[in-house]
Length: 381
Ligand SMILES: Cc1ncc(COP(=O)(O)O)c(C=O)c1O
Image (cartoon, rainbow, N blue to C red; front, side):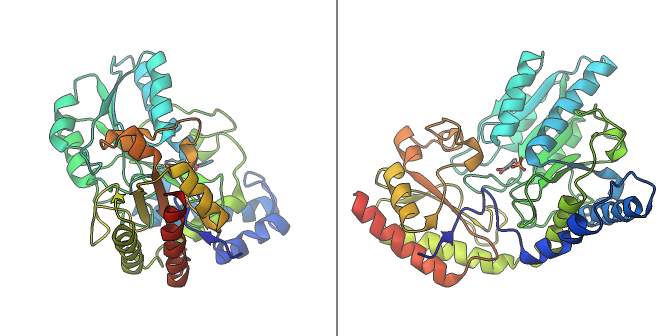
């Protein structure tokens, strides 16, 4: 049975071209980037080029990119690092504003920071998952040191307007962090033009290797390191660099520019329209859109009129890989907090499935998957 992989929001196939460029860093150029001999110098050079490439992909300067082990670490580094810096400065600023639709690694970092003296406001969202700029403005207070809002939502695909939300933060004199793990290479991002101060990126959502990511910091933004070590990453993140992984990440960034966003949007909308029309009683979670600026071009999330657990099981048995909610939050939550935040009932949330496509998804596979979905709903119903 052929596998049809529609879980690219959880992780992606490593692009074979990315694998290729990584190979030499396992076989020949395996030196430590801090060593002064030829092997080390080669590794160091590769690291510089990787940093340049990742920076360029978001319009940033190389000095602003801190390499990490992925999105989870970058998000932890941003929020804990900023808070600890405020504590060090004795500023008395201890308030974070975030939302009810963040990835678990932001939510749980905030929950932990609350035990350390931080106050956190979790903003509501509307029925499509959008944050209101007015509401954001109303909750920022003199003690607020950062606003952290996810760019492209991992479950329902809602893409926030960073321009509008960032302007509110600028006017209030508060730093703005965004988790762009899902939107990176799927929504044009240029930090030269966006009012954003810190941005989280990772590699395994963009056809790069797992366990690699970055935190971008605008010049002048100060954080206290999470991991102390030998001065790596401008002293902000200790540990021997994962050169092969970072070379792969950089290549994935370059190749991400090859994403044909219009084609992905067309396939996404085709899937949504077909399923909603053929499965009566099904409904879309998250916004409808035509140009990929409101909804991630690869995200589909549908509530079915049948038991979601059983439906997922049937899809899996027929080789269609999907996910219930976010793979990274399948830690015992029966109900997705994100679906709850957009007003779905517990039952609807439990009966929702996320399908996420990629530039490697073929139309013929999508057609097979639609047939499997329709038949599986009939079987469960
Ligand atoms: C929006 C978002 N942020 C952060 C992460 C965590 O990234 P990583 O798996 O690289 O730690 C994910 C992964 O699912 C994600 O979707």
